[in-house]
Image (cartoon, rainbow over all chains, first blue to last red; front, side, top):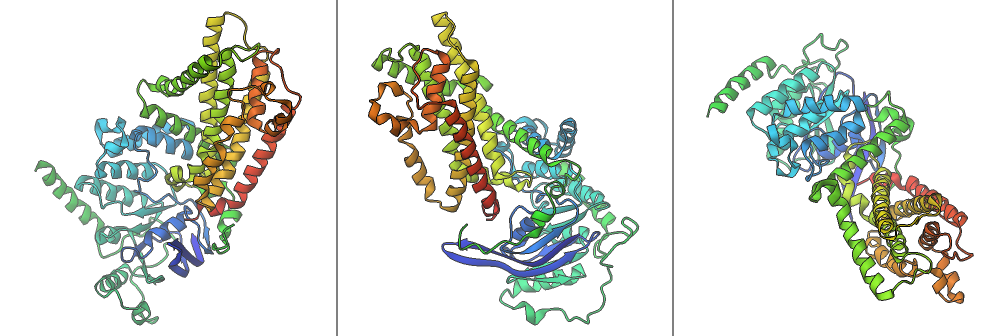
Length: 275
Length: 283
């Protein structure tokens, strides 16, 4: 469970204080996966960093139960002159005991499928290869909550399908907080939406509502949120916000039928490979 | 603390304790600390090896070449001024010890910028990067010192270390002093960015004040108190005395003073760091 109270974050830029968001309060229960929506620069990644504890807020508290990953998919922590294997050894030495390190690296090597590049300097990798390694690394560890920042944006169809599959698998035991401009991926994994707009956060119990609002705000960015805030007495959403029996209920938004999605992707990927 | 930073009340940081914060619930804090430093040392070494040819030997070659150039220049110009001490050892002690201090303390100024991406893995804190750097530099320069001493030993064919314990102690104490200074300048450089330009200038004169290429005995009596406060000079003189007990040791030079320097510096550095850790991690 993550409980956020009165969270405020601002940056100093050229002597001026720029507020990213002000006084956010929300609770994410165990079993809920959140899609973080908002325009570029709305503060989605900043919020992820704060939730992950990499950055600290100006004011406010974040209470976390359970372990939270680093923002999955970011490759900033990788040293360019080192190979993937060496970079992974560094992270695994921190997050696992000494005798597990080799297993974890093997896991990532098998997942990434980048062949001999695995032992070449990281700076020579394409962005797709980087994503493969970074994503594989995050999945080598069992966190209770994964913070996922634009994982599927790089990489080919095969990698996308694979990461979708593995996320689905991980979903049985873990929750996600996702940022992704590919809305299809969000529909697949999330059941609630948080929309960040002009420093405020609006909660949606249904993902589709959130996405609708997000899309309309993209078209009319100047509109203030308060005018458009969904009425309190709206229809109760079709998706229960809490899943007391994890795994018993399918944790996928009804908008997308997951198995269909994956099988579609698989066929298209085979075609893609032949080209 | 910067006045422009509003007070931080993020309670999660303090109440949760270090173990439960990172998905490492079952691991005791000291083990996490050990793992992080182990991992950082691994990364630092691998990075250095990857940047030069010939693997680990290549890492040693560059500082060794610098040392030999210095040895050659000062050896030729100044002749054998080491008194009873071999000129090679005289200069090696000075140059190795000064460089050790410099690399740990001054280079920590940019530790925050250089390692920013690593703080993305939550167990890694800024203090760990400075400690890891101190460990790597100490190991590297200890090896270099051993190589030089071995070289001189082969040439001179006589016993050239009279007190290994004193040599090791002055080396380690100087490294600890540098670690404390390094932590302080890292924090200062982060809070007041102009420090990053000022501090290296401020430290430059130390090269001439630390007895790298003179002995305290060679300085007129009345000037000695102005130099002997310097822990680098203290460590260098102690090391020379450790090589050859007949190298004259000025009264003001003592191991006790170096111990106090190391403890005070470390305590001060850690104190400054602990009080500013949140500030360092806030972007």
